[in-house]
Image (cartoon, rainbow, N blue to C red; front, side, top):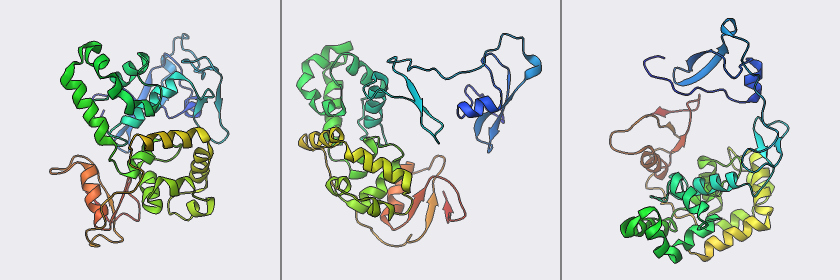
Length: 291
C-alpha cells in the first residue's frame, strides 16, 4: 500500500469494529490514513463464506481470569484485577523503557524472564537486583559482562530527571509531555504528590480528566509507599533539567518527525526546550516549525 508492505492495520476499538461490521475471517480493504497509518476501511461482505465470526470482547481477562470492565465514556476494556500478572509485567516493561527510566539491557523479554523467575515483582525490586548478581550471571548464560552492564544501567537510571520518573510510574493519561509539564511545575516529587486540584488545573494542557487521574494516583497509600521505597534506593525525586540556555525559541512551537541527521528526536527536543521552545507531537494551527 503506497509503496510499503502492510502486516498490521488499525481497528481502533470495539465500537469501530462493530460500526464497520468487521468479522473474524473477513477480507478487508485497507488504506493509509493520512498517507501514513494503515487502517481497515471496511469488510468485503460479498466475499464472505458464512464462516466469519462476529467479534466480541472477552468477559474475563485472558491472563488472570478476573472480570473485565469498560468504563463509561472510554473505549478501552480493562481487567479489574490490580494484581493481574499481565498488568504487572506491562508496568515493569513500561518503567524500564527508553522514554521512562531508560534501563539499557532490560528489554521486554528479560523483564518477563526476571518476573517469571521471581526476581522482580514490583519496580522497586529492579533496584535490588544487585543482591542477585551471582544468580543472574548463570541465568540463561547471561554472563558476567552482561550482568555488570545491566546493573550499571540500573544504577545510572537513579539519576534520571524527575519527568522520566513521573512518566515511568504509569499514571493513567499522563504521557511523556504531561510528565515533563508536571516536573517543570512542581520540581520535586513531594510537591507533586501534595498538589491540589486547583493547582493542577492551572497548568496548560492538563485538563480535568488527567487531574483526576493524578489526584487518584497519589491518594493511594500503596503508590505513595512505592515512591518512598524508590527514594530510599536513591532514585532522583527532583527536576534536574538544565536551565534555559537562551530564550531564542521563546513562544515557538516545534514538531519533530522522521529521522534527524545529527540528533535523535529526544536530543533535538531537549535543545529546543533548553532554549525556551516547546515540542508537541502533532501539527496544528499553533505550530511554528516542523523539523
